[in-house]
Each structure stands twice: as structure tokens, then as C-alpha cells.
Length: 135
Image (cartoon, rainbow, N blue to C red; front, side):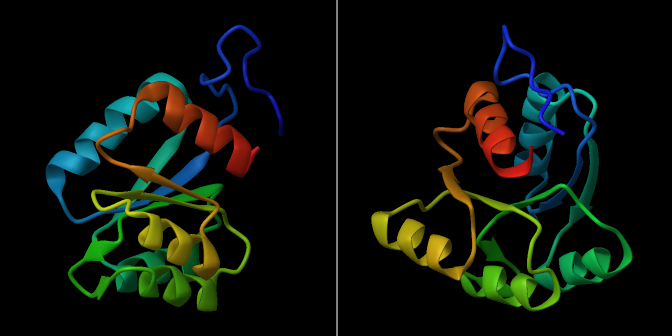
């Protein structure tokens, strides 16, 4: 499935199924826009809680999970651990507003492949993270 475009490494030409786990409308829309530019063929589903994410993961196989760590039913890396109980192999990329070194370390230990601060998020960074984690 490695098929990232050579001239634009952040533009993924593969059709990915991505689950966005985020409860803030603005952040969902920001992520959608960035994905439309770096992974234009991606299909997106949204879960607003960890429980909704787990339910969706039981019904469908995803290429990648984009996960916020501050959700109504979980805070911090516990959401990663909860998801890993149901889905052990789907790559998780954490998108967080609080990417302190401790948060990053805990998220990676819990099973995330990458942690990106929402403040640093751009098309290229998201595309590179998806390519590294999912393809």
C-alpha cells in the first residue's frame, strides 16, 4: 500500500479509511481540511468519545486513528489504552493541544505511533505522519 506521491511526499494517493476521535467541531473541521489536501482519497468517520470510537472499531477496519487526548469520557493516554484493548494494530496518531514531553512519552508507551501538537499541525506534517504510520 505504499503509494505516496514522489514529488509531494505529504500527498498520499492511497485511499485510507481514517477514524477521527475528537469532540470539538472546529478541530474536526481543521483536520478534515488538512486531510483533504494531504490524503484526498481518504474516507473519514468521526467519533466524539472513546466509547464511540471503540464501537466504530468493532464494526469497521480503519487504516489509522487520529485521536485527541481530551475527550468527554477520557483524558490523557487512558483513551489509547482503552482503544488498544479492542484494536491492537491500527496505527494511532495523537493530535493534542497539550504535547508536553511527558504527554508524548506516555502516549507512545500506551501504543500511539506519533504525537503531534495541534498548534504545529499542517498538511505536510500530517501527511508524513500518515505515510509513516499507515502505509
